Image (cartoon, rainbow, N blue to C red; front, side, top):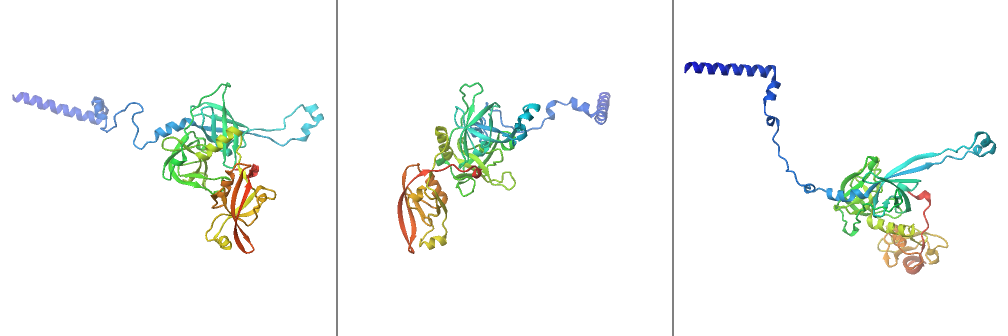
Length: 397
């Protein structure tokens, strides 16, 4: 028995010595000898779910999935035309040197985004994205590219409608976004901004509706913006602002920034305005608005006091175009316009919007204050609405 015990003890001693030597000189041999499972770290993991079934709590992937196919990238090309050289037109020069082109080429003038609003290929975007374009190319979400032409534009709201051209002339069917209702939009609602910022490719950013009805920003003639803190950067112009269900509620159009990048103050044109402009452009090729030919300025407490008014209300008529509808209706400089068609005027912007909403040719009642012989009297008149002239190109964004 004692002999067996000595043999066992010697065997264990030799084994430990061998193990020690291998561990010092060849530790990798011991790693190869270990089971593979010993190298893994115990972790907790969510069990695999069926395809499309696992959506993280609070995720907006469904909204993004619904809206993304309808948002496109817009690339514009503008021809650069150099000044004509008189010598080239000289017959003697052309006889010796042949016909020569007077220069010119093409340059990519910019890029932006757009939203497919109809399966037949109508796209909404910003007017300033395509204003100067000679050629327009639209890249779809699936990577395909199509030529497009501008159906019409409205520089005073900075909206334009494009029509995609089929490559072979056949009818096309495209993924169109679903239009939301502005009545359902409120401050604090979660929104997604989708576009092509800086040309990096389709990008989704998230934020909330920061404010509604933003105006007096000096961006457009007619302003009623949705303000959002969802990141909007150059290249996002014309892209989609969608709600948490993926429905379109606005067209991204501008940002407030000192650096050129997003500072959390972006503006979108409400879907209600975009739809009205789009439908009129598609049906008539342009947007027709009412006009009476007046210039107005903000009422102040001092002006209200001079008129003997208890409250600051209305818009002060600073000028009247001679021979215009307002002039024919008896409106004079210095009058304070109170109502248009029975609707209250609170400031010049509201006055502009109310008049623009009237149809040219209609006779609309106006109410105003007028000072006469040191007294303020209420005057009621009717004006036949004229057609608002197109703005000069220099005043466009």
